[in-house]
Image (cartoon, rainbow, N blue to C red; front, side):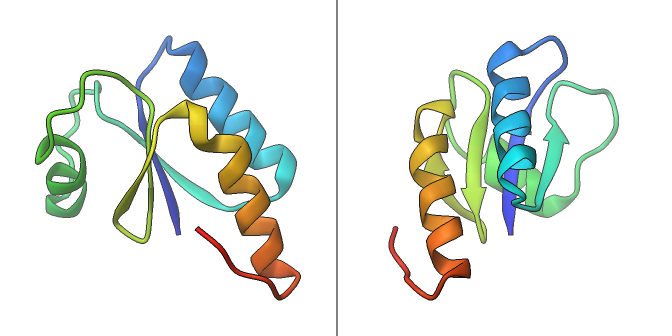
Length: 87
């Protein structure tokens, strides 16, 4: 599962979400700037590291990168649907 950690009014976050939707890749979006309490998993993933920017993208709780990796991630995810695997 892809998890995108981001926040409101973040154009890069919106671009990542739009790209994943357009590619038909399911993902979970977590607003780390909201006032709602995050689960232990999300707190560990995002706040357990020293990130300086959003969005940050995880795949199965493994950090993949920021918005700059979205094209590669989409290619990999689509490749897995077609029987090839990378990343």
